[in-house]
Length: 212
Image (cartoon, rainbow, N blue to C red; front, top):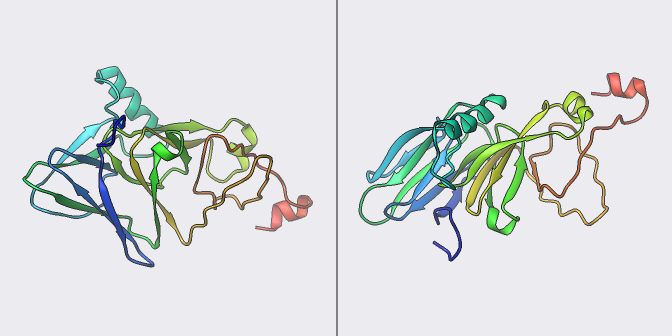
């Protein structure tokens, strides 16, 4: 584990082209947390445990903390539970995760992004243990009404590795201060909290209603 890092330090490789999977390598005692049903395979020294809540170990969670973490996930229509995969054997062990549709897996080191990223619900695949999985509300009503994804997005917080999955091809864009980019609703995968976003009509009312 790196100095000052609270999340478990994990190694990984991303394999595949059109349909990708990520293989995570865990040292003894290390864990990864994932959405239920995302596990592809695991070696014999890996044990599974279902947990209630968001998987964060930033504090010793009580019942109310667990209920709050689970409630946040319920607001985004996700499962109330997560699955923890732990290396309970000797030496390094491996576990792989994948989504069942074509797309790209995006490795994200939260320690390099200020400890936080906001993403579309259903994009989370897995993360190092101690990364907190929460929610982010749209600040403007127009985004929730017309943005195609509702009022709630999800948020990852911590200093560990996380993995998102997005259908199709993904392009990374680094916006400069004051720079604006128009994106079709539903095509935004994730953004840093420093990026502000809103929903706008394109063209006239006819284009808005019948232009797709």
